[in-house]
Amino acid sequence: MTATTPAPKLGGNAGMSGSDYLEIRGLSVSFDGFKAVTDVDLTVLQGDLRFLIGPNGAGKTTLIDAITGLVPATGSAQKAGVELLGKKVHQIARLGIGRTFQTASVFEQLSVLQNLDIAAGARRSALTMLRRRTSVLPSIEEALELTGLGDLRDRPAGVLAHGQKQWLEIGMLLVQNASVLLLDEPVAGMSAEEREETGNLLRRIGGERVVVVVEHDMDFMRAFASSVTVLAAGKVLSEGTVEQVQADPKVQEVYLGTTAAIGTALEDEISVPSKESV
Image 1 (tube, helix red, strand yellow):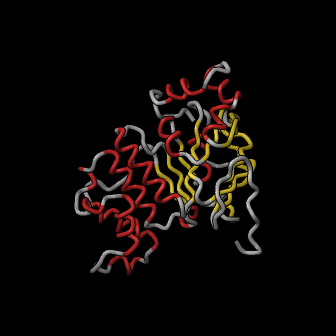
Image 2: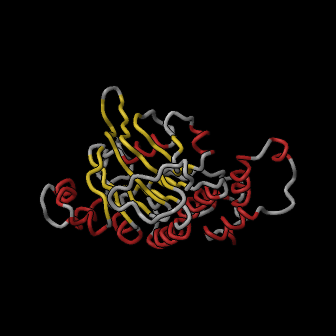
Image 3: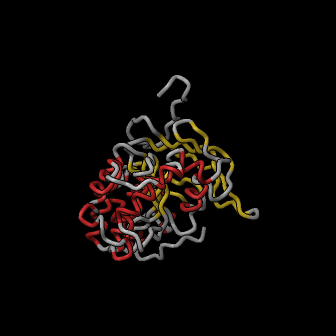
């Protein structure tokens, strides 16, 4: 971290130290007077696999929409000291912010390799894009290895299994050198085996990146989260390790309306439809 870059102000369990970080301060989003997100503070450092959970309508997806420029917001959202709010979507992407949606966005008629090549070309000039490729870029080879899609490189993306399409979309972010990944329910609709593979993938890529996962699958969260932030009614309700969050009476109240064990209520999250109202 250079002398001109302010150190992140840590809060709760902010994770391990690293050269990259996402720091959000006082972020708010309003729709026609309705506060969907209110004064959110959040710090995630490189190496911290942060899960963002909360009831439907808590503002989880709206928060990452704001960070990536899809909805206007007030406050501050910085990547390693560089302000993101107010910038256009493509400018934020070029700063290394990568985002996935609940439904994978891949070119289904093209091969896995072609999808990755197109993603890698996002920063190339038009002249470079027109040149015929004689070899595979090292960044693409690395993405194929990390995602476990190496043996499927020539397979059309449209015939991939649901989980494999999600892995390909993550791979497309990796070849764009995204160092902050915001993943919106990456395991929705996956089999148990695919969820396990996805968690292992997030661990492989998370050590050198900032990773925030919006998730409803609480078994997945408990198995792979380094730390957890709970949103409720657009505000941060609790933050810490999985154990700390599960033991927090405020979280228990939101999920259960009582101070009973949170585990049972969190299990019910798995069967809740994954779409959020905001």
